[in-house]
Image (cartoon, rainbow, N blue to C red; front, side):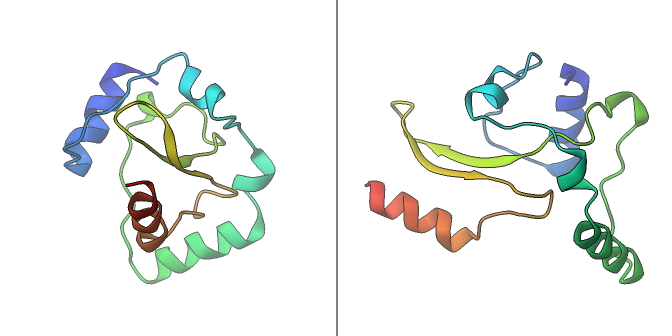
Length: 111
């Protein structure tokens, strides 16, 4: 993505931690994160998004110039100070995220 898009996201979310700016997606490649139309657009995801809409849950408003690969898959990773991965979760869908408890358990186990 663009630096402007990253700055927009930081402002919109109030995120206060360091962010890796990776316009060439080398980090995504290193963690084997891909892009999948089928995983993003599957029925269960569309159903969940429609439930969010009906319940009036708000979605982040992203200006069109920052939208690039809508089908890019995400992941959640925690690295220690030496760069060793101590927690890794490759998302199977846009709504597939690990629980905070799982992340904290990984942090506790690594210390």
